[in-house]
Length: 364
Image (cartoon, rainbow, N blue to C red; front, side, top):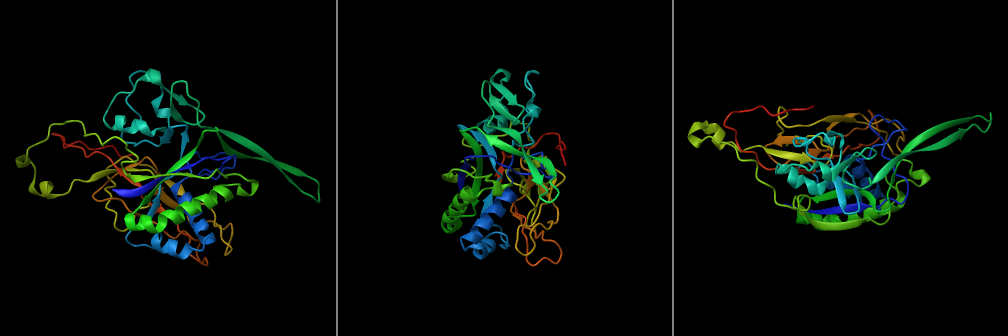
């Protein structure tokens, strides 16, 4: 168990998190964990704590003292999350709901999905605009809009019209994220600075187009607790009962070996030197993350692209995942530029052994 915080951000205007393609007329509903870490690092610099922060996180060989999940939407009391790929989409009881069209599901649904409970089609709808699975009769947490602008050539008098996509949230909706501390000492050292950095960012803005006032929020809400209990409020259900061979039927080495755990990622992830991931198993996808440098040493230069495992992926690992923060600065750049791939992962129920060995699905 780790100390943690749930953070709720309530935008008071447009919000923009650009897609991996960089297209200005599209937007990503997820504000990814690497972007959140970068924003907090920038705020720590303003607060005069950047070097201490980097030593405790990106430069810490034993694993970061603080980890962030990505930011997911919420509406009212419903917090949404990318479900584990190993159990989603759910097996349909009928064709009334296109479960696979939902990118986000209510967090409260996860324990039921893990225990294999069937979903009642008449209780749910998929909101096409937000890709959220909603209780029947509910409205989605946000809508995507295009805002138009015109670049004016003051000498020639010509104008070039262009559009930028943004997210507009309902009054009772926004984004939520998890902060995980490595231990109680890390919580005591970094809880107050992280809260201060997030309050500063609420005033200055998250994401793109901050010069236009986008990305600003009301003061964040914080709820403390421990992980994973604060995410999976109900106890982890046992895996479905299966026929398990006796110890006499198993090789001695297999009895002694620790059983690898399934880890449900709520952040982007880049494996570190200590991560023992079985890449031949699990159910995961990979994306390429790029972007541009925000630094007086070279503003706007392209960062090196880095493949990262996406949220919702389920990885099989012998130990808890740690992750790493590779330097993605352009060659010859004046200072490192860290891409945070620290894992914020929730352990899933340990599966029992099948009488007949089956190869799990792997999606890359």
